[in-house]
Amino acid sequence: MTTTIPTSPADTLAAIIAAGVARYVESLPDYARDFGADVEPIEVNTSAVDEARQIQLCLSCPLADCVGVESSACPIRIEQRRVWRNRRQQWQPLPPTLDSSVKDTTRAVTASHEKNVRRDSGRRLNP
Image (cartoon, rainbow, N blue to C red; front, side):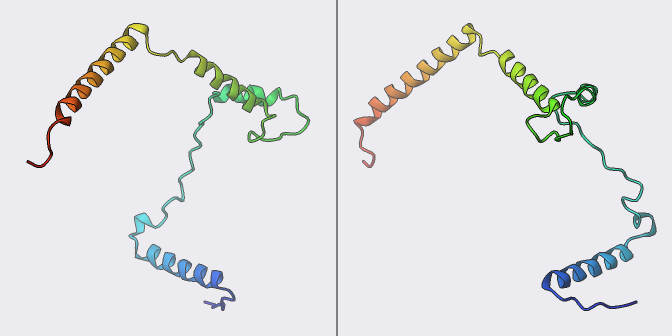
């Protein structure tokens, strides 16, 4: 085992962490030592556009070079914005009957509160 002398505080910290991880792995039982060796990370599609449509858009991209999904010029990004706009436009406000009942309830609560405030305004707080 060779020992290297750290030259900077970051190297010292990295050496301390590596030694701690090595001791921790040694303390694990045999079945738990190869944690993560066979596990592949799962990629989750969080886009508004499904994966098949993304592939189709990518293969038919009119841009000369791939600019990446992060760019606003990417066809996948343009499609995402279109889908989000359509979803936002499909959102409907409360139906008029429900909206009016909410307004009536709000008026009743406000009137009751104002009545209580008027009733209590003449009282002294400390008798």
